[in-house]
Image (cartoon, rainbow, N blue to C red; front, side, top):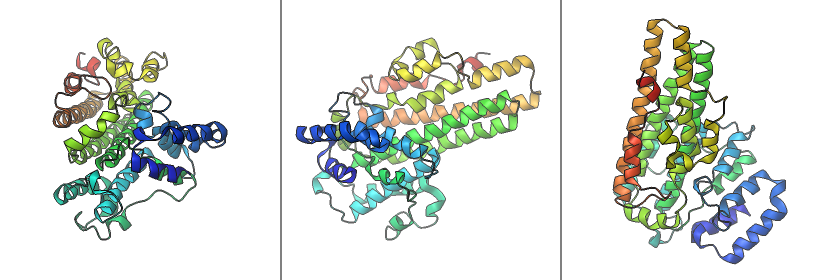
Length: 367
């Protein structure tokens, strides 16, 4: 059922599903979803507009993807799932370019754009596609990594529900999902680093901080892929995404609050009022941060100067990579949005410009 419904959504756009179909899906959810968490998550995302609770998590089918991460048989890490998501985007581009059914009105990319898009996407997937040029499409699909053959991973193929019918929205959704997985991985790194620092295990803490910085390098590749999206297609389908925005990314905000408590203006800005669950987490007394661990350990004289130099360099590297990531995000928004408001009811580019000034370790820089 989920596959048939998903195919229909991709033919019509979630925003344009008939009232009759939505009513039938609501009925199915009320009768059967309690028996299957995957079906419940699938319908939660599919019925979001119909039920008046549409936002970033449901647009990106994150409740369903998170169930895949939780499935012990699949043994998927956020980093691995990010690779599978981009691989699926590559598969979609290659298959539609090769004549897979898709009406011309959907606007497939021209050959030059396609080659550029695939070149960056193949680079993201990395060694598993070692060697051949991205323009050699003959066996590329066969070499792409696929999800494990578990019962849970059968749901992987039904985690893209475009709101409209233009070609670029499919790969746009996959890349935003990938960003969420990368920030899930980064948050895990930072949380582990805090624990290691608290235990006095500087080397282990440094390893996780460096890994988080490296994951930001992968995230930078995603921006190069997104830059191949046609502005006219984006401006058309985003008319139907109002209410869903990257400003609502809970995983990005969790990464931020693990680094340090946000300043009062930041905490009361749209960045955190858009994610009330994460904002509540900031107020929890047990919430620890890299910044607080650093200050406590400094006060206790836990490490020698050479060790502090290593930690300072690692945090500076993470801060610098994060700043470059934000600047690149802003640059793409300038090209895609221009003067338009953001789909999360922000001012768009001016909001992102303000965010560039935000620092993860602002309390340490003032030390």
